[in-house]
Amino acid sequence: MALAPKFGGQAFSAGVSPRAVHTLELYLDYVCPFSAKMFNTLYNSVFPIVKQRYPSKVQFIFRQQIQPWHPASTLVHEAAAAVLRLAPYKFYDFSAALFEHQKEYFDVNVVHESRNQTYKRLAKLAGSTGVEEDKILDMLEVSDKPGDDGSLNIGNKVTDDLKLMVKANRMTGVHVTPTVVFNGIVENSISSSFTPQQWEEWLEKNVV
Image 1 (cartoon, rainbow, N blue to C red):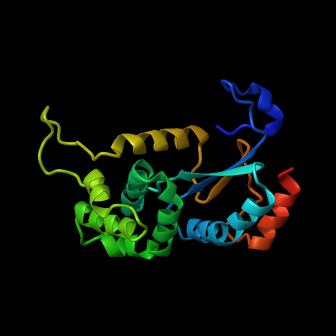
Image 2 (cartoon, helix red, strand yellow):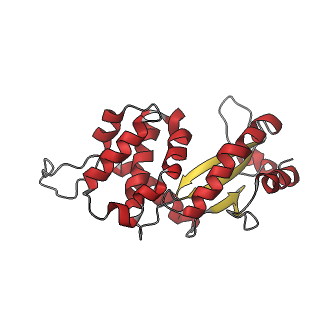
């Protein structure tokens, strides 16, 4: 997980000096309204400030936190995992698009469509951000044919990636979204209602 700069000596780097950088991990769910509120503030207002005032001092990590009581949560996170595979530089742009359109993937808006139909909508949304729609869909669609070994729970081409994300998140014990972890410790003072000004004040105090 994350490592505070003062513990930088615990890091091993082959041929590269460890960078003194703070880490903010954001545990967000794409169909969580509070996650959307936090992400939008960061993406639109805080990240530009970070680039200007805190270069090489702090990094943000988007931790995809699936909330399984919303069935579409898994599907939208799979779409983001596919974007990570095909065009990682588009991950935050696609995440912004997902949050903008998140209500389209709420329970009442997916209940009457099949899983693959939802994937088609997600692939089209990815296409709107400059990612190849057909390739995204190819990674997401689930076949209605058994696997070569006769298996029926065959998943799709990002299933294994999602398993790793879920495993990592379970190890931290995170449940609520959004949750923010600063240098490996849950930071309860940060909430989804943080304004850009509050983020500025927090960063000024904690990123030194």
